[in-house]
Length: 141
Image (cartoon, rainbow, N blue to C red; front, side, top):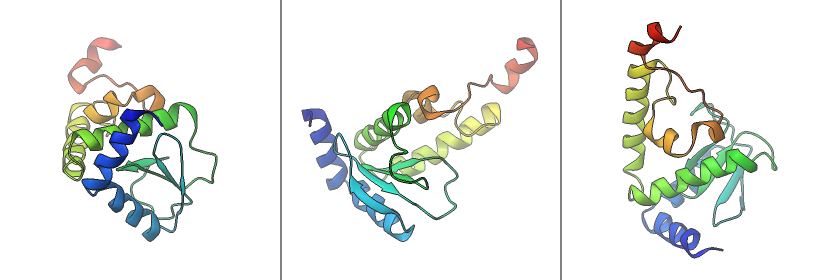
């Protein structure tokens, strides 16, 4: 494991975001296993919130899909979110992310297109659309 991934793993454990992610995975009925780069994969998540193909809490990447779904671009996207938890000192990431969703929704009507966290994690890798802001829509047609 690279030193930066090990540092992220330790930071997200100490800041309690990874333990919270494991608890959410267990409550959601997911099966947790070790993944690459210090991440934990939680497959079979059964709760309907949040509505996403995958989401990350600390170093835990959760998905309703079966084992093998977390690969390639999606995994890189979720790995970047794990790094964001470390930079946000863990649990403050949750209200900051909620604020970013609200701002994105206000700017363009989509929760991810103008969300700073999703943009930094790469919208394309996460499967999100690039949408113009509400005030630019008329000029782009």
